[in-house]
Image 1: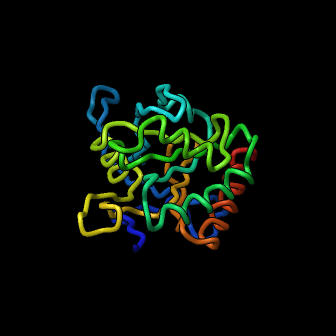
Image 2: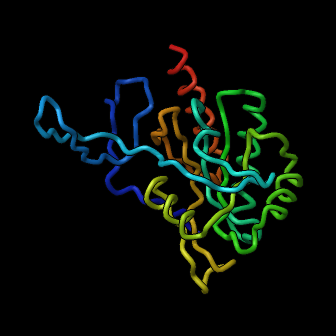
Image 3: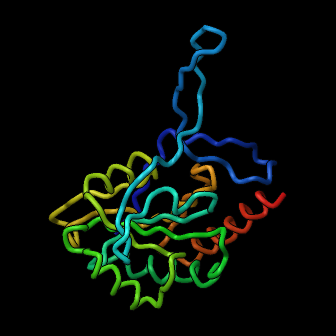
Length: 209
């Protein structure tokens, strides 16, 4: 299954010579009143507030990732194609940054009808994941699809002809502490995830400086 990315409208925030990672979030027009006059400015979109349910049965909101760098992805536990590769690769990220309070992982199921809290908990346990640094979340399907496409700039859609009945992106999305997207990577390959981990370290260094 091909990795599908929605890359239209990406805006790079820095030059090639800048050591900081670019901001890949789309820009949006924001109008505000300054000195009694309406002023329209172009600002980077951020990942919006959300409310999903984790593998532990509690509600996960944007507060969970406040002041953290995190990696987001979209998968489903019964996926017969790219998801097993993705989870092997994301486990590498988990093991590398395990215990780092500035880094989290957030995996969204795109098959909430099947992927209940109990199913997600078993899936996490089988991966050897414990604690709250890597959360597997479920919720309303359309809400998950919407945040994936319109905020994280990846896609998932039902397709009865596709293995597992869903076509979806194999991307890992790196998000900074201001909830801006700073990188999109092929989560099915070692090379893509090596670059992700290198960029996580670059982003951590950016905040330290």
